[in-house]
Length: 325
Image 1 (cartoon, rainbow, N blue to C red):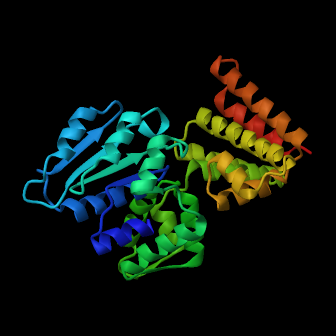
Image 2 (image 1 turned 45 degrees about the horizontal axis):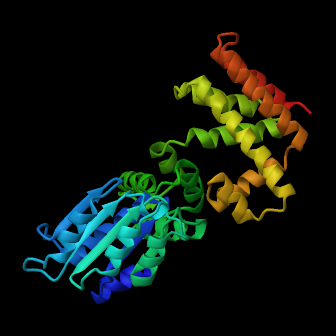
Image 3 (image 1 turned 60 degrees about the horizontal axis):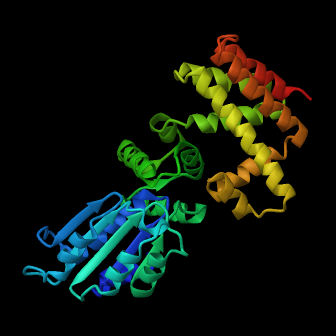
């Protein structure tokens, strides 16, 4: 990101950029910043191409044509899949781009061994934009709040993390609501977060398992009944319980293989700080116990789907099993 921002600041643009990774907010933000910097409000010299199998001859015709009352012609290409497949013709096109052309690729995935990836890296810049680490996320959240002349209390911030997904668009939307709600006081409190942000079902399921593991049966069931009161479907709760138990079992296996925290987080596709919480929870169980619980969860889900077992009863049976020694 730093390289792209410097290019924008210095108005010294490379011929080609690749924005890839799983964080759509960051990709979209940088793409829009580049578009504004390169082309401004000019649409005559801008082409947008979406999807696979882009027409290479059309692209060449566009970039080979001199810009009309502008410095550059800009092509924005999205989800082409060219960085995961053979793309020799596009490599040759990038090699011959004139100084008056700029191309921005936005992709979900990119293979660094791919010829086009290597060519873009050589002639331009490839930026991997994934969900931020906890420290990066914290800086972004606190910066967002500070820019609106507000503050957030520590306990409110920790609760807020339990309410948001990994998607930065979700984080921004929740922050917008919070800042508007607490605008009169200028300080976001835990009560504000509780009033505005719905704690994710996944977080409540995580807490249910923790409570049951500590033999706090009443607390586990209260969390379950809270979800029912919020009209969460019992079958979805059962699915999430089973999925969480399977992920804890996977953590056990990965720890036995001496995988690092970063490798485990990548395998689970979660933020490292969430991985830390999951690893702590996995340590509450033996591998044998987790295997029994995952097998039970799968069996209960099957019985519910075949009509042999009541949905709510299935979850109660699973929670009781978790509390057993």
